[in-house]
Image (cartoon, rainbow, N blue to C red; front, side, top):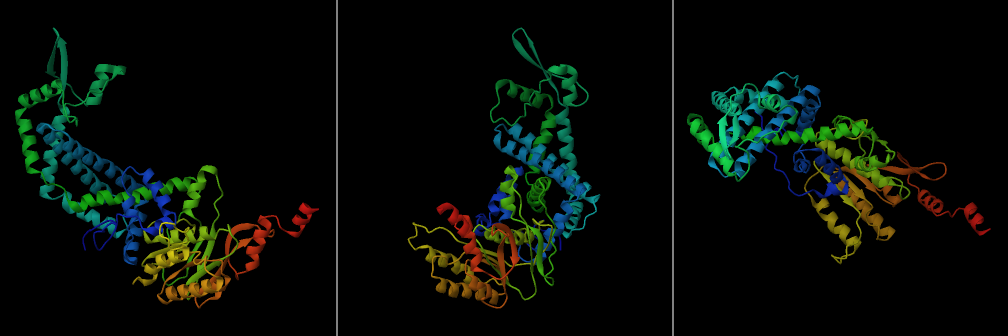
Length: 499
């Protein structure tokens, strides 16, 4: 099969324009905003589109592996910069009014386009590529850039643009009049300025600039050039008419989509320089899902400015284990750990490196999240009803094998009722073949059904949270002791205060 997209080997991705709710629940929107801030190109929409299936995830992961290679990364970065000149020329063409300007900018647009893809093919041909995506792209580039049609268009565009670059004009002022005189100069425009003006170099704008309205002098310059070089501008006009449609849609889409990988690589390198770890996950479904040094990337990102310590955790979900039920003291890192699991699944599913030191992540059909929110006065339903309304589409969805992150459900219900409802939620998702984590204050859910593993947010010897999450039997006393210490209500503290 030929090249289709660098983001999908089966079909052209259809991007979702709205931000998925789970991105906000997992604070992934904060990470994506940071990635966008570091990128010169608009990339957010690519992070809203999840690949459909393991094959696509593996396809992306291999592409990203190639993108991280220094030689490949340099070739792709230079390509994006060249293609941006093509897009800038297109913008200029749409802004100018004078037809002669439009014709010139269209010619430059095509010249930048041809150079961008010719250099891309030459560069990738010299790289040791391993991914199916970039290999297929290189083959498409070979067929396209070496075709008679492309070579003829490229040669003509380069000739016309080179001739334009060699035009020189001098303005002479005499007897209160300005005279337009063509200059004869060798070398580049930059060298001409340096030789003529020295340290007082002033860059003059081309009369074919992208200004929508030209003044009288600029129009006079264009008129003189058009008259003195009528054959040249006749050729530019013919080129403009003959190559109105010139772009390869698949390659232009690649020019946009490759920024997904480049933007994440830029972000990842910046975070690694700050001391954060990333790793390429394995994706073996026949091995236990696990991670070492897993951390909440959004929390780590927000803490960089104040040098806040990043707390990491390890986990393993063995064969037959389907859901973590996480209990423990308030402010003990439960929600943070749940978010880090969701982020792990998300970045792995996107085919990118994950925030950990080692990881094996299974492939999931979807990422489903339900985080507790404050009661809304707008709906008038109450918090419990709002939770049930949000939970319904998750449980009625047709997709099996999703990864589910649930944080503090049914907190306003009586414990007995909350336990019954919580158990039914766990049984439902486990029966559908899902995996996930359920953060709760209900210790009864840690043994609610088969496939559930009890995790607990731990405390140190002084009963103070250390934000470590370990396999451990749920224990209400941990929560109680935590609150006693937090509010200085131990026997010794009370005795001291009352004595």
